[in-house]
Each structure stands twice: as C-alpha cells, then as structure tokens.
Image (tube, rainbow, N blue to C red; front, side, top):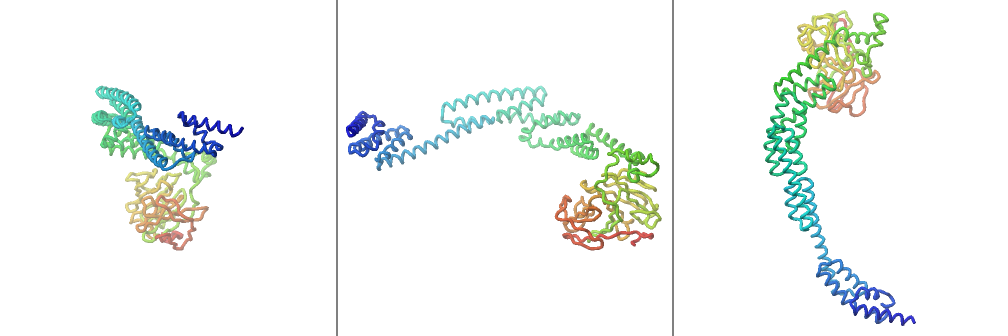
Length: 532
C-alpha cells in the first residue's frame, strides 16, 4: 500500500515536469523518500535542465534575483555543476552592477532634491538633468519651476522697494529670495545695486542717531556682507553701539564714556554722539562731586569711627545704607607697613587699612607714608571705600592740576602736594581692589622706595601692566595675599590667578619664585624719617 502511494506521487511529479510545472516538480523532488528512489533520482536529473534554462532566461531579462533563486534550487537538489557555477558568477556580477547603478541614480536624485530644498536653483537644474528616472525628473522640474517663479516675484518686489527708496524692505525681499531659493546671476546682479544703497542708508541713519534702524538693517544684512567685504566696515560701529547701550543700561558711566570716545574715533564728529559724550561727562562730574562732598565723605567718617561725636552719630553710622557703607569682607587686617625688595626692580612699601595718612618725613604726626619734602606733618589722606579711593587734603593739594580738598581718584590721576612732592594714583587691575601710589624721583622714601602699594586683597608682581609692582626682567609672576593675618605668596598665571600651593612669607628672608628674588621686611619710620 505504501509503495503504491509512492509511485502515485512520483507519477504526479513526472507529469508536472512534462507539463512545464517546474516548481511543483521541484517541491516533490525535495521530499526525502522520493529522492531515495531510482525514479526520484531520474526526476532530479530531468528537473535540472529546465531549471537551468529558466535561470538563463531570467538572467537575459535582467531578473537577476529570480535567476539566483533557480540556481539555488539546482544546488538544493544536488545538480549544481559547472554550468550553474558559471551562470551564478555572471548573474552575481550583473546584480552588483545593477545595484551600483541604482545607487548612482538615487544619489543623483538626492543631490538634485537637496539643491532644490536648499534654494540652489542653478545647481539643482544641472542635477535634475542627470536624474535618469523620468518620473522623478519631471517631478523635480515642476518644483524647480515653481521655486524659480517665486524667486522672480520676490526679486521684483525687492527692485520695486529699492526704487521707492525703502532700502530695508528691498534687503528683506532680497534676503528671503536668497534664503528660500538660493543665489543666482539675477540675485547677485541686484546685490551690486543694493550694497551702495544699504551703505548710504547706514551712514545716514547713524549720523541722524536713528540707531534702531541702523541696527535692524545691519543685523539683516549678513548674506550681503558675504558678497561685498567692504560692507564689513560697519561691523565695528554696530559693535560699539551695542556695547555703549549695554553700559548705559548697567549704569557703567566710565565704560560708557570710553566706548563713546572709541565710537567717535571710528566714525568722526557726529552731533548726537558729541551731545552724548557731553551728557556722560556732566553725569560723571556730578557723581564725583557728590561722592567727594561732605555728605559723601560722612559715610567714611562714620564707618572709620562709628562712636565719635555723639550717640546720634553712632546711630547714623548704623543706619548708613549698604551702598554707602559696604561690608569689609576682603580688606586685610591693619598691620605695620612692610618693605618689599624685588631684585632688579626696586623697593615698594606695602600699607594696609582703609585710611592711609601721608605727611612730612620727620614730622610730629603719626603717618603711614613719610615723604621727604616741604609739606605738612599730616598733609593728606587716601581713603578707601569698597572699590573706590578718595583723596582728602589737609594742606594745599592739586589733582590733575586742579586745587581740591576732596576728590574721587581714578587710574592715572596726578596728585601734587608741593612743587617737589608729586604722586600718581594707579589701579592697574580690575580684579584687585589694591592700588598704587607712584612717587616722583624727588620725593622717594628711605630705602629708595618709589612705589606705595595700598594693599587690600592681593599684590601682583610681574612684567604685565596689570601688576602692582612691575618687573623689568624675567617672566615669572607672583601674587601676595593675606589669610587671617598671615602674609602668603604663590606663583601666578598671566591673569593673576594663583598657581600651586601658597607659602608663608617669612619677614627678613629672601625667597626665589621662578626668576624672582623677593625680600619682605618690616618698615618702621623714626622721628628723623629713616628706618628704625
């Protein structure tokens, strides 16, 4: 019974093969019990020829995957052979070549689409011509025509706005054309007319003080600046205007004046700019007069000695606002003056405290800076309040050749106490509240001291202009600072920030820090004005 059923299945497979139903015969040939029979082996032999023939037809028609499928069936029934191997090699190569060609076509389409989406219309037109798929090519051409038409419309609107004198609108339409549809010969041609019009508008608006229009036009002209490098000449003006506006908003009067001066140097004499400078100058002078008035200095007196006078004065000191009487959170404790010797540089005097007394060497007053010269025993005070320094004279004095009794000191101010007693106030670093009094050659202190460092938080020693003590040789930098009454030192970067661990400074000992040799010792003044 079983063998009869086997013969029935073999007969059905042979009939299918004879009728050209190759796949049905193939499925039967794969059955293991049929493959073991002699007629099953013959079925496989007979099936190999039509499978190979059909694989050749698929290969000739370019149906390479179908051809490989039939060749795989030949191997599955064990009838591969040399012909199958040769055909498989050729089909595999053709399939790889077809894939590469399709990849190239896809890449060409992607390039054309990218150029079109990015607005590079001229490049897109060339890439579209390289697209082989006619359907995709026509689709891209239709989109290109729409974009080109819209670009022409925007460019026409830009021309109309420029002819009407609306430079801002013309720039806006032109920028939109370039951004959405790309640069072309037409847009570049129009740009050559737009550049001088924008330049004239910027010049006119700046001179009239219409800075909002100036800033808006400049901000929207980024693409135009790429086309014409000469247009970059307004960049400095735009930056200075923005900086001046920021200083005005923050109330930084000194920086505002400095920026306005730079703006005038860059753009020349402009009426509104001169008026602004005069206004800032008047504001600074009014503020300085107020701070140096008796009312402004009252806070210092109360802060220095809150118990003087009456109980009302002490109560007033307690009620002084924070802005006038800030907490002393960075000042070092008051100590006796120190003499600092730096090889190859000279001697400097380090003094601390909110009030530094200046007077005649050998006088009967207790002073911090004993100056040899024909001045009063206690001639003047330098008063520190936060980041500010004030000059208070008890004898004849000038600041920048102007007779004063009180003055707010600024970096570079020249102080004259007598014909041969002249000092220059300097605050070299904005990162430190410490300041420097440079003495003239005729009024140097004993030990050839030419610099007095008003030591608050740090004292930077090095070759940079931001250092309190300038060295003439070497590149090393050193920062001195106070920690709980102890004087410490460590090497510093160019910006003054410390490097490495801090070391205690022993008085009277010479220490080397890089190429610096520094000695710090006590400085006590005798009645005769010399060292004790």
